[in-house]
Length: 573
Ligand code: ADP
Image (cartoon, rainbow, N blue to C red; front, side, top):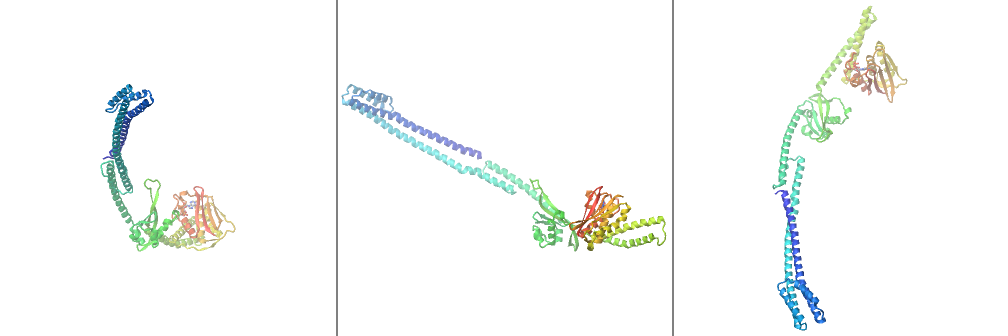
């Protein structure tokens, strides 16, 4: 039965019984009132008239009072005849009253009247008794019916009270719980409501929905598992080691290459905290440290690991996994990948290249030195006079030899840097010596372009702890760059200042300047600003940076395109 029908029937029946109870009560009270009224008007009045007539008769006999009042009561009695036989008794009374009027002295007449009145009173008394019994019966039947109806009402109301709230609330409760389970992705949840009411229909719809969700979820799960396997296979087949971590640094996966170079077993790693593993594994410890470093300060040096029975080099790359959770707009970090790019092959090629450059530039040094000597002999004209044309040729060859020497020197320096063989000879050096030597080495170049070299060196500058030869080379390289990238007839300022416990040597030119996007790149090896027409190797600044940093100093540049550049080196006192 439908809940609506159940409710309508239950409440309707209750309503009907209440109405019945009220009607019955009213009816019973009404018939009781009728009975009482009947007794009052029909019998009690007749008794009252008779009693009054007896009183009046006494007064007539003893006090000779007029019978007017008596006749009044007699008249009322005549009008109030309600019982069978009362009419005859009243008629007898009237006749006896006539006789009494005719002969009042005759005691028989008054006795007769008294007897008549007593008969009327008795008749009414009997009627009152009879009617009381009837009224009592009416009351009994009223109580009976009201009790029956009341009990019925109670039973129905009690049944409704016990069953109705549960009937409605229990299925809602069960449904709420099931919806909660579905929300928690427990799609196997079903509801079972017996009966064909609205809840039955609801259960059928709910179960259909849950079934569809389960089907959908299963198909998705299968798809996801497939995708997971595909990605796992892909990561496992990568030649580069890859390690995946969640936000709490629990290792989610490590591909075969990663396991190989770390010397770990999958079972001992997957699902374990990286911190825990780092206690006994150097590679994981290094990677954890790399993750925790500030992104701008991250150590970019390749990792050197003994793998594949040789020294191998790996470039670290941290890829944060950022996702936007469903219903949210902000991206959230849920973990990271660490990819170790195996650069051993490039490193080997690079080493071969460095060795080759070192060997070639070393081999060049002796022939260049003998060329210089030969040129010196020619220039001195110790082996014969030269005509003007020959002199010009000698001068040209001399310039080229100088350039060749410079390039060979730079190449040798860079090979030292690349192989990590930079030999420093740190000593106390006077700034004046460094700057003056550097200016001395470049003043001819400046003169060729009619560039004036201005030197500002305060007196009493302290000595610095540096490699004299290399620092002089750096300053002369900066001045030579300033000359090469400046216009003719311009000026260059070489300055040294004391700043706290450091000395800053700056080389300022009014040349072509450097575009902002190249400011950091010019310190990279072999980098030359595109379109640069001047000859060069792109090594000078890279070597300068390496040399200066090896001495614990730094090199910076401030430049404005078209206006000039200022290179500043800072060294500790
Ligand atoms: P190069 O041998 O090419 O001069 P460097 O390493 O000394 O190599 O310089 C790298 C690049 O930086 C140069 O090619 C040049 O474009 C730029 N550069 C260096 N110094 C200056 C300067 N003072 N003014 C403008 N550009 C400069």
